[in-house]
Length: 131
Image 1 (cartoon, helix red, strand yellow):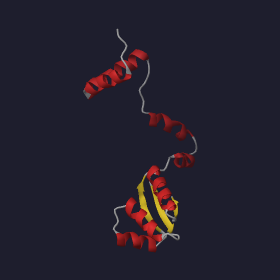
Image 2 (tube, rainbow, N blue to C red; image 1 turned 90 degrees about the vertical axis):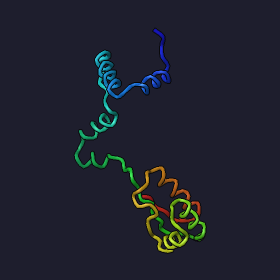
Image 3 (tube, rainbow, N blue to C red; image 1 turned 120 degrees about the vertical axis):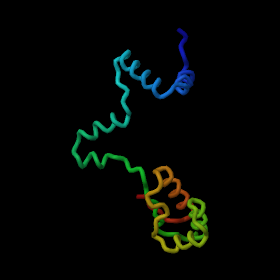
Image 4 (cartoon, helix red, strand yellow; image 1 turned 30 degrees about the horizontal axis):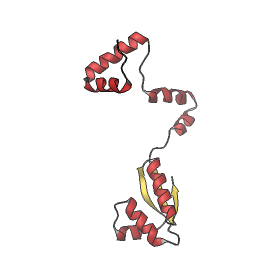
């Protein structure tokens, strides 16, 4: 039997229905005496073994607040960055900058977006915190 590449296997799986794929997984598990488990369940098991409070703290935060603490000396550049990062108009962005400390993103962004926003605003001269 010819050996299939990873790409060829993926193409074959894409052509299968969910029922066919489910049957394949069952046969695969029986043949190789393994259990296909979700990686999340495996990672959560060790955390559940610890203290209850520690397990809750171990969960990674997935939504962050980006808070503009102060505009700094370059207020116009900060307003431009706020407008580029959000869908706010000029007046709304100016009001946000004038009213600092205020949230730019209130728990609506992931860690990567929060870090990008923080870097952009700090690059424009603002003081920003991510919580």
